Length: 453
Image 1 (cartoon, rainbow, N blue to C red):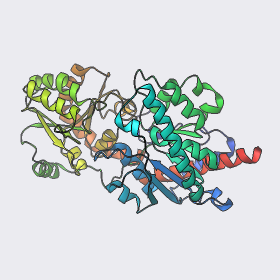
Image 2: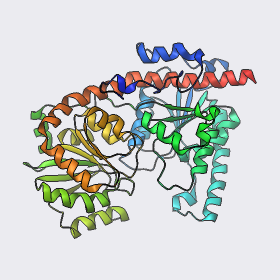
Image 3: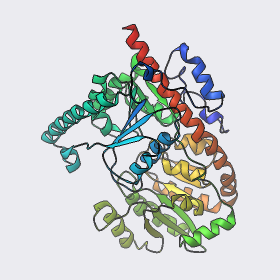
Image 4: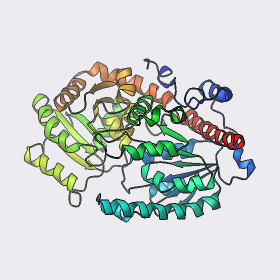
């Protein structure tokens, strides 16, 4: 990656020639990369009897803060020229918002053993039975909808829809939004998913490289290697954008942030993956000792009265005497304002795909201090938008936060350059058009494959 916004999106980010193979798609690739973001023509398969162009199968967990849902919501809203239907398991505010852009149906993903958290052999067996039943129900829906393509938004959606999609002959876009859990025992399942999917769509170049490594040897086979593609997410600059210093001061007052203190904002629901607990235990005490003016604001679902992980975090704050260094805000609908009002946005997750909090924070002009979770070297370090340290180096992360807090020149530069970068790299109109072209290429490839057979 180079240092300019344009160079950061070159290469295999949905490039039908580079990543999907086939010289016949050269003109489409050129139009996406260099031409105007015009509305694409309807998917060709519609004329041959398909009902909707894309069925999105999306599993929701019910969290108020969910970056993955925000990402797919932006794609649904901004992909032009596609008729869309969303099948999802919950009625939420997000579900209601989808109805402005797609037909939406509530479809229960009944997986009792998965919901119960049981991982024993009998639980896995019954989970498989549940998924077979769900695929049978999904088959009936897809026969009715007759989609040109099926887009599944996570691994649960994938396993509850893949057989049904295969039975109706629709190509499957497996949109993966995370990296593999370190030490995962289910790598065989991910390799099988790669073999079954028609496209394996991820969110960044770095993420694609990570999955190619993790899914070897299957990912080295030419017929599966060609399935990989990446397409950057969308960040709406009308929602996430910088403000001037006067407005930042007003926001700090509105959000009841303490005057005269440096604000470190950490966004994400409290859970093991987001790793607030070790950050509290290992990073904040050091930060407090080195910079007593620093105050960490955790913004995201926080319910210690009913969630064990959140309760452990609350206990750690009290046990370590960090009450004057930490504020647990809970979920906030004003997440963009928290980014704008921050001095530094921190992240210490165990793993990520393309962290939504990072790209939204950059769009608001925030400086980042983060572990080297996937895509942060690509979008933060390569453009000098903050500091990226090795996973698990809490002392290093604390020092990086302190360094960013003390570097006013850096933070002033990031407030100007980062929004320019995100406005181009995560542009709604261009990336929405790229996704629509991507769907067309998937359907065209499937149709060509069927004609050849």
